[in-house]
Image (cartoon, rainbow, N blue to C red; front, side, top):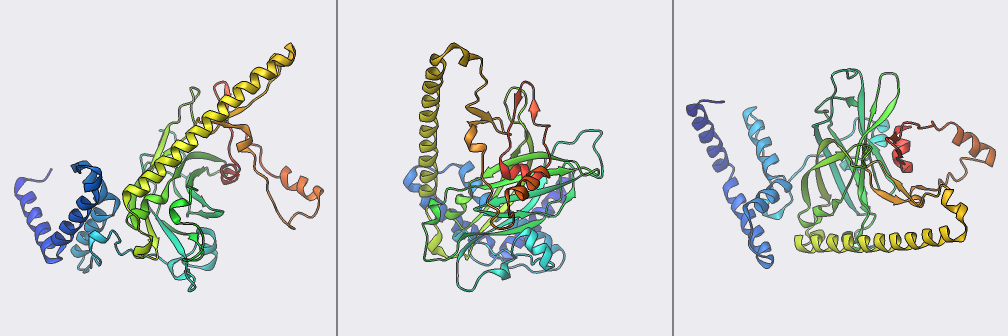
Length: 367
């Protein structure tokens, strides 16, 4: 710990920096706008304010400016924090092959218009490491959203993997057409896969991200906890944390919605999904009772209505099925048979007495 004299000197340096860059007034403007927005829903707590400051990237940009000032580089904070949209330099990809594998860069935005989400993977932390880990093993982050797939560069698997990649995904092809962004319910699915030196792959963790919180400000920083394979009791274990930064592009105010509206819509969708699940469970229970009453031998048959996913959640078995439409890539059933035969057989999904099923995309990430 630093001596009190050094701490005081550090406080003076930070205070001068905040004054010189007019950051105090920007913070006041941000707090004022946030409190006004919250007045309709009740009092604002200190925790809510701190969370909003973190989500809008205020702390990250402030620390970045302090570091760059120490190296002699001047940094402009750009728009007021109250706008919720901070400047973010998007790194260009190095070559065409790398770009096609990882996604598009900012310069690839079509001139005709559209709405996009820039996703920056800042870092990883709290990944599980054993004493006998292979020092040569690597991990790769895969991301899928609305039929778009991206992969990060492989990095060394360690407690804090040094992820540093950017993805640009399309929310809507045109600004004027399509349903409102708030009604796009599909979530961003993230999968981290570990690859050993021998080429063997295994699932590290997975998570689905509701990206729509970015609609309340245009900019969002968040920590995403990855869920590893569930144990024999069906409980999913934490596999690590990813620090992400999301930004809506273009940063037009026409796409920004009140935070209350975004939260209300998400809550209504969760309630609707819960009601649908309860109805299906009641139907499955009634069907099973009727099936057993047909003849006594049915009680000995293995009929599986629900299956356990990697995170331990129970889902209808038909939700794990997905048709693959190759178009003209496979010319005949014989070619299709050959294609399926070269897919690896994954026999390591059994934990305890249960068997966990992977969806198609997670399976292909490990293949």
